[in-house]
Length: 251
Image (cartoon, rainbow, N blue to C red; front, side, top):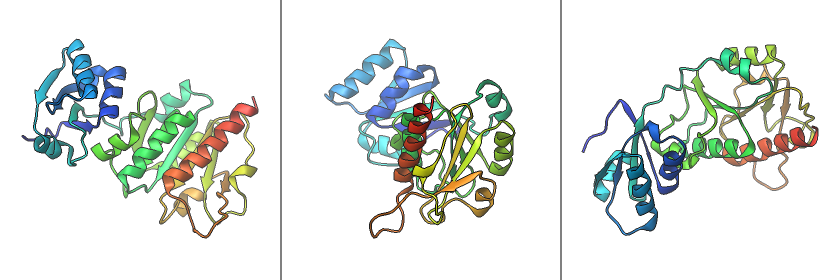
């Protein structure tokens, strides 16, 4: 069984179930391992309602498609998305006060997926990811996101600096994160009348210096123990929820 280069693949019970409920038209076919699992049966029932093609597959075949043994008995072939085909100008035309997450050099696909999921939960409307030197939106990242891309915009680009210029022209505050900053995230003040964009980077390198220089303000997360830094997905949760809380409380 071979994969189609013109398609993307996602796997896992929750991820596939979420896509079935939100975007069934994006699904080309579903590969399923025959089982008495009630969750698998539920997916089959929904897929049949939409008249989607279901292919019974072995565990090994599913592992080949998903590139992991942790597929939970279901893999979905979906339409290949072009995440570079996005107009920031059009987006800003219709989103005057957006809450944006920018990810710089996130190389671990599980961290990428977790950041996407956290961003969705915190109310992010757009995620921008640096394309080079970063994890792709692979099946592993999709599984880790647990359907987090549903309902939000996602864009990959190598020209993040140009994006920041456009955000500033639209009165969107650019917030950078750096563990060396003397100002911590709890000191941040937010104006709910303006949009906010937050940049987070990998644990190893953090946000690149060229992007930090374009930020309006830079904050750190206070560390009270002996560790030097936090996992980027954990840091993303802390920063986004603090900003979200202040945006809502200041309305």
